Length: 207
Image 1 (cartoon, rainbow, N blue to C red):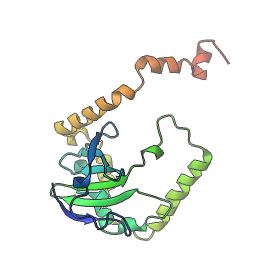
Image 2 (cartoon, rainbow, N blue to C red; image 1 turned 45 degrees about the horizontal axis):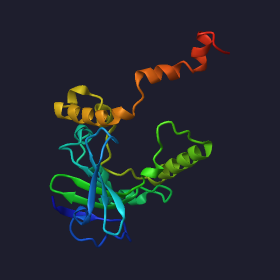
Image 3 (cartoon, helix red, strand yellow; image 1 turned 180 degrees about the vertical axis):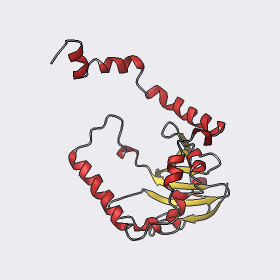
Image 4 (cartoon, rainbow, N blue to C red; image 1 turned 30 degrees about the vertical axis):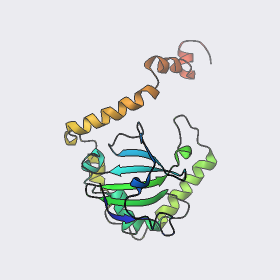
């Protein structure tokens, strides 16, 4: 699927790239188990060894987009210039956006190593950094809220099961099955529960 429109941040090394960036990749590997919306994720490797993450979005296969009347908000907000107002303390990692006939391709630096994993304990210092960054973003958009944002009604409407089609349910189930092997078993959960102070007190095993 060819790209009909492209965008890169000012000064990006990919700004002058002609055609679709994915076509220049020497290796493509699907990324599974990281979401349940139906968006397609791949890790791309290029001839110079550089790696990018490609996220393909479209309301045709992303049920969250369909449920919130999203035609490509994650890309359109960048093309409109709205996201250019983000404070420097927030790094979206996006290096290129391409519009296709059926949706959008969003290319990002691979920042997987910086993701918070399950069980991560956030320090007070990290919590303050996060709150400061959110406050800076709030200040940047305080006087002018970008158009095209998801409405509160659409956001809440995602929970309406009647709006979820059979195709959407299958998509969520596939993602859940991919994540399932990493989820703790019921037996493991029960075993952990017996170590809780309240449970130990109830059993007379400790203070």
